[in-house]
Image 1 (spheres, rainbow over the protein chains, first blue to last red):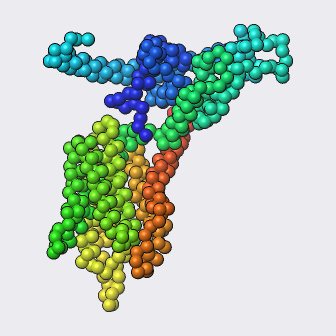
Image 2 (cartoon, rainbow over the protein chains, first blue to last red):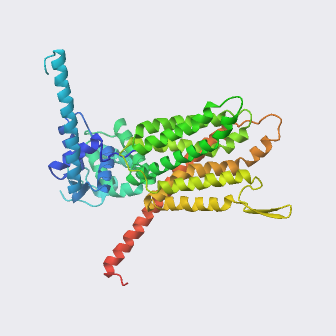
Length: 119
Length: 371
């Protein structure tokens, strides 16, 4: 079984959950809503996937529980990014940015070569 | 609204019946749509391991209900599938741990290199008969050591993906080399099963190494190479002292005491191999043993499970071929052995970690432990 996260690659749900928590500590449903906003509705995390990711991030030390509340008889737990989580998110963001820059540059060169109008 | 700690008296978040139930007896409290939905979600949550449920069930149910449509009574197909698939994933992760972590990858690297070296030596050792055959040199006899030499070289220089490709080719060569005897001697195929398993193991560990982050070559490889050299020396000595077999160290023949010259070489080889294995560190050592389980299991299965078949097969005028169920057993044995080894390893390490946490907690409670 492959890990969901290695030093070189991070799956999209993991990246999006870390991005959501980078803004502020959030509980599970708020993370789902934030991820939907971040991706303009393209990604809707479901509870099973979300909590598998949260459990994995906790065991890897990238997030931790900030506080717990009981709201309408239901436990609500707020998660926050740790320093390690912040570093991993920054590294992954830099990697994606670098790859996107390469793709943009090659697309511009291609359009110049082929005489297409740039998008 | 006052938070209630007992669910059966709590007003649900989407109260179709109206505000509050203070005036109603508990026994006559009607079940709302979300009560039904919550019940169904909790039945799906039962597929999660107990640890995960204890930690997250209340939160997850809260999130699931918050995301539900008003009046929804049943989980959607996608929602149910999401819960079931992730329940299985969480269980699997609990059973086998993280097979992609650094210790597993280092163990896979060790097994890949040692396995390729071993198969190279075996191939070279069996090469001379191919060279001397008057009918011509069999290409397959050359292909065996050649492909493993290539795998070893590529793995050592860090070309992981190319090495994985050649390792798969090497496994195919070994299978073909053994399979050509099947119609004449199924017993010979069975006896070579462990060697084929080694080749498949090298292919799998090569692919494992290629799939993720680069890890450095394991330390102590030269010790294992020395062990193989000692085994090779012992094998050559045994070929001149044909009187010995199995674990015999000395025999008396025609009143003459004969000592097996290969015996000390084999002992040295065993000591060197154990030392090479020991140098890998505790985490990697245990994983190397788990990766070796398929080879040990197939050797044991053939030696004991198929002993009767091999004994009787040789006494028929024409070879008795293996039946499909026997093939299934041969294929399943190494796979199940590995899965069992991983589950046991993971369980043992988790127990050890808990025991260590307990010891640390005791030290913390009692202050510095007396020397």
